[in-house]
Length: 203
Image 1: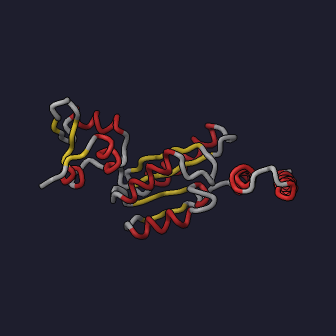
Image 2: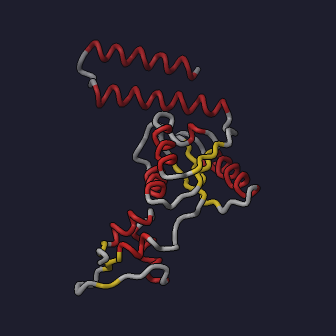
Image 3: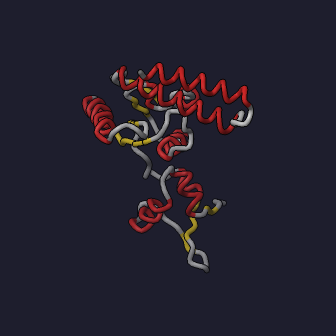
């Protein structure tokens, strides 16, 4: 007997937002029943076997907060062109955040798609576009769930160095505020030294 899921649970399985689930239900792409209180409920087995799913190929594009929309568009164009040349139906996930931020919406959605068997192929312009630290963990998930990873390696090296410097600054900030705190004079001195090193890298 099939179990019934709330709209939030259905969205997690499908790897989309609850707004998208409502739209798909209204359009007849998926079916639901209504509780006496008028809430939607979805059969778990129907969702798991549903043919409506994410694109088989996802291109993931990310910029740091200090980068421009034009830089994001250039990255997206490279991904789209690469996929079109190979006849892949590609959807692009955009993110704007630090390379050490694991809570960005696009990254979370990507991981959900991988873990729910909704993805055949992941395309990146460069490995570090995914995460500066921790990308290998996501690649391991791709291997476990049978997702092919394609890295174009077309990222500008200068831009990549800038990203690494920005990510290092984020790590230092986390180190300062979350791990050791700033009250200890020895730790404060250590943080200042790290900040000076970061400035010298960016100069």
